Structure formats: C-alpha cells, structure tokens
Length: 162
Image 1 (cartoon, one colour):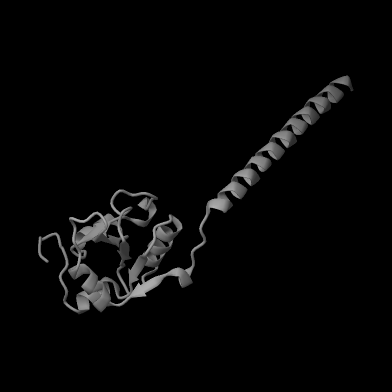
Image 2 (cartoon, one colour; image 1 turned 30 degrees about the vertical axis):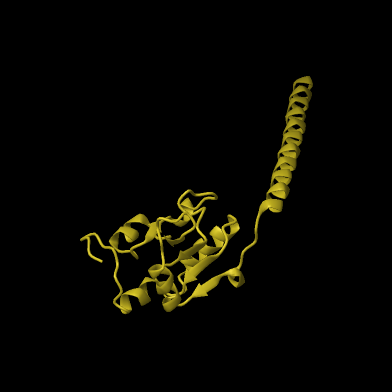
C-alpha cells in the first residue's frame, strides 16, 4: 500500500509540474501574440490598387534604372516560371522570400506587381504582403502576363529574346 501511495505522490508531483509549465507556456504564447498583433498591419483586397496595361506600360517606358527612387516591377512567381518568361525590367521575388527593407525594392517610389493571369491570387498576395511589410505605393498590373502575351508585348525568355 505504501508503494502505491509513493507512486501516486510521484505522479501527482509530475502533474503539478506539467500544469505549471503548461500555464507558463500559455502565458508566453499570449504575450508574444499580443505584442505581435500591435505590429501587424492588416491588409485586405480593398487596399489593393489595380492598374491597367496602358498605365503599366507608360510607367515601364518612363523607368530610369539609374535613379535610386525609381519604379520596381516584381514578379512573385516561382523562379522556374520567372526564367521561362518575364517582363524585361522585372525582378523575381517569390512570395515566401518577400521581406521588409529588401535592398532591391526599399527605395522604390512605386512597386508594380504582376502575376500569370488577370487578378492573379499570387500577385494579389504579394501586394498585400508588401503593404503589410510597410512598403508604400504598391500597385498590381491587373492583366498579368496573360494580357501582356495577348497584346504581343515583349518578354525576356531563356532564348534571350524580348
């Protein structure tokens, strides 16, 4: 009988320690999530700015890559898709790789994002992520590469053609 009591006492000690550790862990999770919520910027579809092809083309024609405050075009597709064909001035930043203060885009006055299709969900997600990372003046080319190709506009391809 004494052995059973000692075992019960040992088990209840572990249960108390486990409950205490669990409550500490829960407190830390709440603390971290509350602090993180204060820094999060909520972005939804209503925050997105869409531009049509004529405005996008005009911006591309006016680009001056030598200026630090230039316009940047972001292609958020996978590297393989980007390499298969992209708009000439675009840089490839796959969605998971978008970060705050990226040296390639942090000084841009305007950031244009395009996707494979019109209103491409991946491009929309990239726009939202960039806005949430505190980039400003982010715009989405609403026609995507589908419209760009249909208009027979140039793309950079593996064969080196435009």
